[in-house]
Length: 130
Image (cartoon, rainbow, N blue to C red; front, side):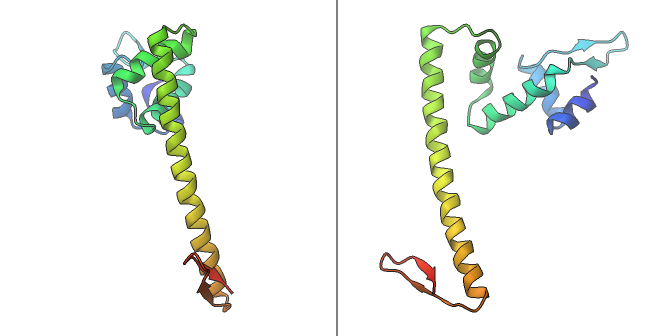
């Protein structure tokens, strides 16, 4: 696959793919004319890299984690690091879930209010539909 195809399928920019190559996170073969060619598996790899970045990991951490994921070989140190990163991501998920639940409540109350049912505060001070 050419760089533009991988970028489009993975939902990233061509510039991001070039950066991943510079960081050693992604490898492309070069044609005689210098064009990058990636295997189809590059799309999933790029998506996984994006998820690791979105979880707050930096390039160095991602570079260390990728071989473990691909080959299933973990040192004790890397195992501990992965456990710590997973715990951190889990905490983020819980925080985001709580935020989503609050937004759902506001939306529900807003929809009830818009439907003419009005709203009031419950004993905890939260707005509720009446």
